[in-house]
Image 1 (cartoon, rainbow, N blue to C red):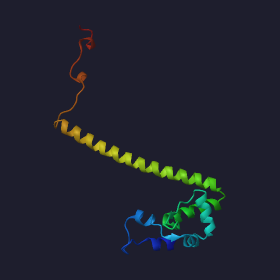
Image 2 (cartoon, rainbow, N blue to C red):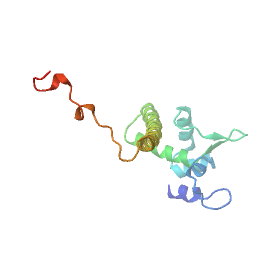
Image 3 (cartoon, helix red, strand yellow):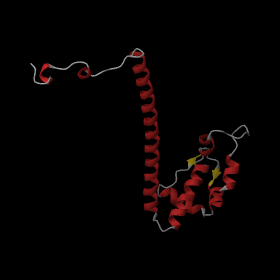
Image 4 (cartoon, one colour):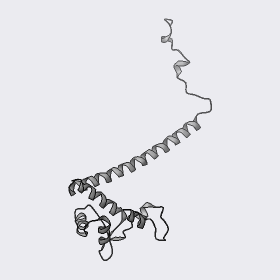
Amino acid sequence: MSEIRRRNGKNRTGRVSEDPAETDDRAVYIISVAAELAGVHPQTLRNYEREGLLRPKRTSGNTRRYSPRDLVRLQMIQQLTQEGVSLAGVKLIMEMEGRLDQMQARMEELRQELERARRVARRMTEAAAPRGAEIVPLRSWFTFPWERDGTP
C-alpha cells in the first residue's frame, strides 16, 4: 500500500496535492497493475466488480481503471474475506459503512448548523437586552392579596 500512496501523492502538475479527493478518485491503474498491487488475480477483480463490491471507472475503450480509493476498498474486501465473511456479507458491511459515513457527515453538518444558530441567538439576546437589565419574575416584586398572611 505504501507504493500506492507514493504514486498517489502528486497531482497533474507534479506537485504534491493537498486535496485527498483529487488523488483518491483519479482512476490510473489498469486491471493488471491493480491486481498486482493488491496481490490478487485480475479475474478476482472482475468477480468483485460482478458482485458489486468494486466499481472501477471505464475508459472510452471500456478498459477498467482503478483508483487508489478502489485499491483501499479492495484491501478491505480481502481482509474481510480472509476472516471468513462471504462476499454478500462483505457487500452488506461496506454498504453499512458507507451509510455510517454519510450519517456522520450529516451529523457534523447539523452540529455546525446548531452552533451557528446558538451564536446568532446569543447575539440577538445580547443586542435586545440593555446592559444591566434583567428579566425578574413578578412574584419577587409584588405579592397578590390572596397570598398575604390572612389579611384581605
